[in-house]
Length: 87
Image (cartoon, rainbow, N blue to C red; front, top):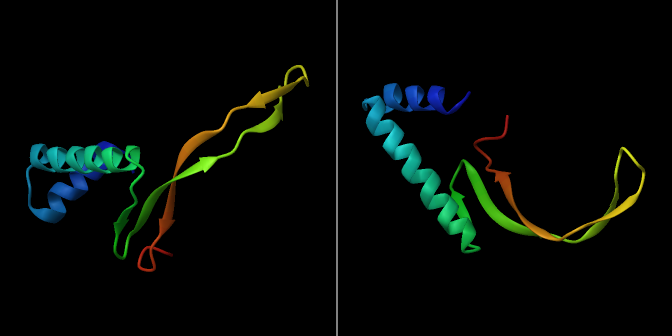
């Protein structure tokens, strides 16, 4: 399912226009992104939770040359599925 299909499903499921469903989805994405950038955890009961984790620096290899490279540390978003979402 892509974003357009999700908007269609939200609109039909909630009885909204596609424009209102798009605004709601965009607001959710903006709010979630803002909270994660602040380092906060976003939990949706029954669905799951989003959190920020730090991936440590590590050594890797360039697949073309085989030369060892240094991969810097960075922050990544993690999602843990809630009990109702697990299939």
